[in-house]
Amino acid sequence: MSFSLYVHIPWCQSKCPYCDFNSHAAASWPEADYTRALISELEYRARAPSYSGQRIRTIFFGGGTPSLFDPKSIGQIIEAASRVCGIEDDAEITLEANPGTVDLAKLVGMRAAGVNRVSFGAQSFNAATLKFLGRIHSADETRAAANMAHRAGFERLNLDLIFAVPGQTVADVLFDIGSVAALEPDHISAYNLTFEEGTAFFTDLKRGRIKQLATDEQAAMYQAVREEIPRRGYAMYEISNYAAPGHEARHNLTYWRGQTYLGIGAGAHSYAGDGRGGRRWWNEKLPARYIAAIDARAHAEAGAESIDEATAQSEYVFLNLRLRDGFALADFHDRFGRNFECIFGGVATPLLNHGLLTIERGRVFLTDRGLEMADSVFAEFV
Image (cartoon, rainbow, N blue to C red; front, side, top):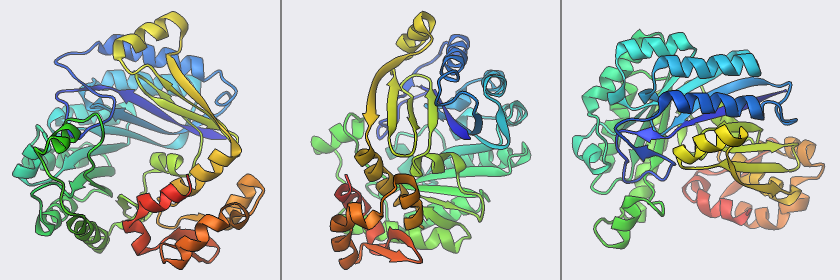
């Protein structure tokens, strides 16, 4: 048995207007105190029955901007994970980074600390698009960062893109894809811009300061993404993710397959389940309150919910349907002791009849049309 570890580092140099993650713009941050708190929380949680005796199969440093931390701090956390739980020999250890926050020395240091996969938020290679998105790096900084990552010994490199940005055209999206592929990552993520409540973009949208692209324009861009990135050698394996064969993001597969993971840090979420249900909890979001809670009681849990079997079944379906090959009917039966058709036949039949879902070779997955209407399909299973 093994589990995945998520480590949240919440600070950024600036807050992007589309970001709804728990991140805080700051000129400085209590790196030593926060690193100590992360290790203390890990030591506490590792003793729980859900994690005790299990090794770690993936680690993901997310944020925020984890690359703002010194490689020594990242190394201390990885060392603690190895000491407390043990890390599998072939574990995937990912660090998110912004292109303008790294140099060759830092990347070499991160690689030496144990990080073996780096993920850069490129977002676009168009200066106007980057400015609109509030990004503080340039396209040339992305190119330099990717090249330095290769030089530092990272064989696993992800680059993020955002499309359907107001003012963007299909030609702009194709230019971004060509630019990102030229940097030879092994993985590309391409996300449709969304306007999440609580973000600056959401406020601007409601006040009429910005306007979303029309639905048909967004659909055309998503189709271009789905066709062009695979043409460049990266197979689509999830709604927004593409990889060279065998280079899928193993950590994210943990979430989509409904497997157990531990999240440490301010605002981090965790899930521990037995296959048919489980428990989900989350931490204090404010870094200062998180550190104080760890110092006081060794954990910073701010809320929790129990996941009953019916909820677990629904989540299993709509999370696995994010994957291009969906899920096997036999795996669903093995997990829940009942056939998929018995539980969800009434929901699935209309989706099958309307060409949004298909069942082939014992697997349930979205059709091409279903991909374009994925959120509507998922909602049917909630």
